[in-house]
Image: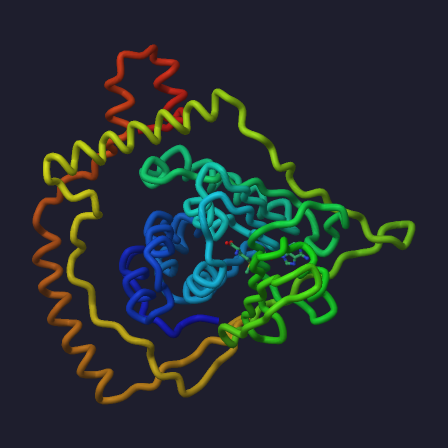
Length: 358
Ligand SMILES: C[S@@+](CC[C@H](N)C(=O)[O-])C[C@H]1O[C@@H](n2cnc3c(N)ncnc32)[C@H](O)[C@@H]1O
């Protein structure tokens, strides 16, 4: 699936296109998408394709198209402090974006069939925490991933406020998924070629809404063990934070608020610097679909209008190029600077920065 939005040159460009095409509609979703570079979840050598609205598959690693993730993030209606379960959590790209909205008092769990993919997700998460400045701009709910078949979750497992399933669900498993949800919770999953949002309205009542026609690879069915039974998979525990960790969260929050107040007093906007003017984009009209691997890719219709838009884009690109030649100031990490300037032992500063590299 995907391909309905123009290709971007970088992550911001991709997000601009998703926003203009109305796939991204809320500020918190937009901020999460901008904070996580989709290219970081690609293998070296494949990154150039990361800013196209296309799914990507390499061995067991599989990312859905950006337009799908945008619809999913919007449909989940995420709020700080909620619990989230990602079934088929893959590279951890979606779970990491979700963690930026859930904040430090949420729960963020993922279950993935392939152990090599869970290893990949853990490496990506570690480099996000260690090197990305976005980590210091947000309060983060770190995802915990386990290896297992999500159709074998123990029946006494805890329930979640929000659930997403990243692979196609058979009708037979619809109830199994719905039961994992708390009353008042929201489940988003592809079922019968529709991305569907399900709200649990009561102990035995649910409301469903189709969001988008999609084509997903199906969930892998569980194998029976030697006794002819299914194994059960345990989800990560819902651990309570220790006092030291809580103190770090509150110190960082206090410093961040202090920095924001300081900036406001100086009249300096805290918003991201104005981006260069983006190319005009709109939802392309689709006249045909082709199969690429196991995904249906829409093919846009060419028209005179599209050609005119191309000419306008070229002109704007030339202007962008001239602007890009102007020297840019390197982005500052004000929270890190503030922590490093505190009269504290180095070990405490390292703890407060999560031992992050510069
Ligand atoms: C489209 S990918 C999801 C990618 C993910 N949303 C991300 O952010 O990277 C679907 C994932 O579901 C996993 N999967 C398929 N069947 C599964 C099952 N029964 N249990 C757990 N994971 C499964 C696949 O291995 C794959 O990683």
